[in-house]
Length: 167
Image (cartoon, rainbow, N blue to C red; front, side, top):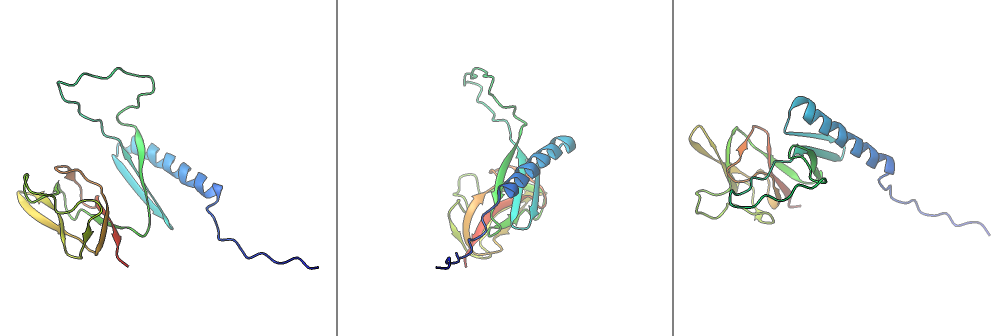
């Protein structure tokens, strides 16, 4: 009796590919330190890696300081922020300015993570030179991630939102 041929298996990510992503991440972390950058992102094929420095948390003056432990990490240690799916659309800052999630300090935010948005819907405001610029979505879909904190300064081209587009 002749052996029955097996159907081909779908290609699974090889351990070598995972090792390359880890090595790339380590190299990017080294570049952050060497060049004094706060963030770096690279895309190759269907993999996108973004590495950014962790920011130190500011403690309230009345809060007691926790005891230092040997395992405590330095505040400026690079970390992997995201390995972003290529299906997500990144909305980037079109200008330098200050990012605001709401039209006023007492108003609700324009959008939250998980909200469904339409193309051209206002997602945030960037204040530049005392002008409030409404930033609109370039695609319809669901807000997968908000990458910037309210009141944070943003640079031109800095990722603000990750949007999972509607298909």
